Length: 475
Image (cartoon, rainbow, N blue to C red; front, side):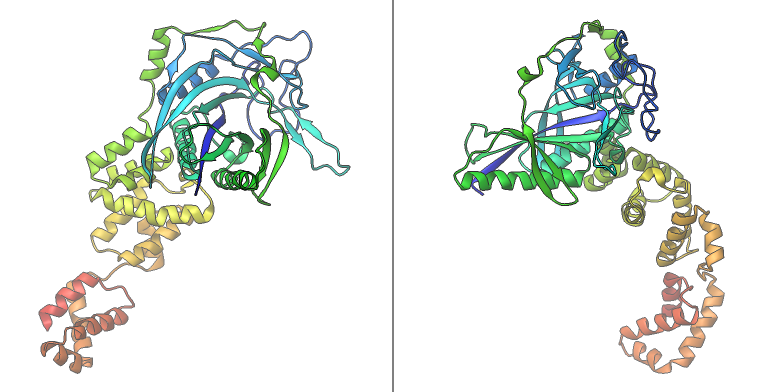
């Protein structure tokens, strides 16, 4: 409690281009090892890179969506170091003139609202992938990923907890998905987090020695790594030791936090302008054209749900966190004549519960939004009860069938025929004269018993509201 954690994030997002950043090789995921590369992305002598125009467009789009200034003049640089997964032994990136600078995002949580600064967004090429799990213990390399275009989003060290870092990372992911800049499939490595973390005594303005934790590919790993490293650094300081500037690795399966190597400074990379690529010059007209093409972003969409449909801010925030879920929700509201809050309750309740059980996102919903609207109408008109509707919904989630067909197939239609129910209720009253007498003597709970007996007689299919209405009339 005597220490404060200081956190900055570097978020690497693979861009949703069809081809790589400097060549025509495909960026599709899952090809056979080393089948999606060419002399350019393999760094063969005599080859020249050509910048993919779509990469610049996506970087500008991400910058505008995160309130960045877009630089009219930027350039590409060589970042020199030796890694076996970079066949050129350097990475083409951006150093002192990135495409985007000085942005910010607002996050909200139990702490209230907070602005997180974004230092820069720059473009660069991804490296290949090392494969260590071989029978003879050797390491192999797959260069398919080498040259896939990335943007790196570098935050200011404005976060003070794992919760703040998670909320910021989740918001970045949502914005990238809304703008179509990246598919953000973390299980495929499309979105990865590097954490820069230090601790310092509370009240101190001086930053502590920071460590970097690289290549976290889930929000759970991000939170666990931050909490573990913060605790580790505090223990080091409390025992009289010194925190060493280094790069560390977090294994979320084993919960192990290990040292990889000493951390390089910028001068160790020997940056210099990439001689084979001209600078990137963007005019105001180009930037404004991209700005006009931006979709409605999550914060604006969430505000609209609150103002137009009266949703609580919490509901609106949860639904708009996923673009696919927001589209599904809106389509359902537009097809349903009732209260949008009813739709919200079902989306945030039954739908999200079933998706979580499957480990799936809203893009994997097997039925159109209008089917949920149709089911809610069946509840409203008394065709099915609320509990029966949940059974129908669960089956619809699995099969994608229409709710009316499922109601018939599952035999879940409510009895809403007043004449038929009156006959059944009269028989129930004849079989239970004591309960009838008890109710007439003022014992109100007798009414509940009679309702229960009616539901039992109809095998739960009687319309409860109509049962109560008829019972009161007969009693």
